[in-house]
Image (cartoon, rainbow, N blue to C red):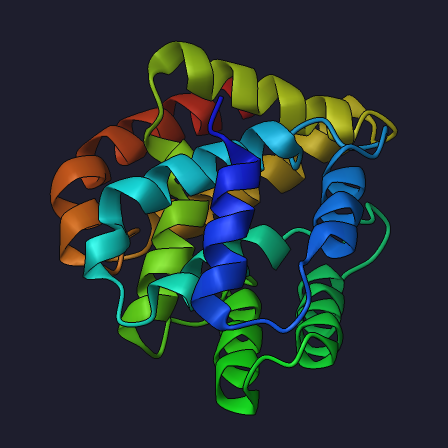
Length: 207
């Protein structure tokens, strides 16, 4: 597993924070370890940070991109529809209190909001954050199957027929996009495998 503590230290130094960041690091670790989470966990965060390590040189503001990955699922409540907004708010409030520049805080907030996946990312760094978040679509067949099981377990309270219909609809929307990945790197390396995985998952949910 990716060394998350090393990642956090890199973020904190890169952002020029005035505190040591330990308390916030522990809070985020605790949030990603909440028992109702099955996919949006430390495993997902670790996978995102591992992808960041691969593409960090492509980022315009690397520390801000890595920070946004830490915060993008910091708040994840199954019955809420504003998790990204609340996560962005948490990032804004805690990073501002740590003395990080207002420009950086604003950009990190925008990066987190980009993971709502409602509209195309507006900046290059937004593309990277969104692509990293969606990289699971192009995982190996075994990991993708595990991901689908984890999503089902997170929403275990939802009846099978409702879940299958809703899940199929969500995946179809991604598949219908001209491009799943916005950045050239992810598009050239992951697009085909992601579409193959999505087609398989949609078919499974429509049985």
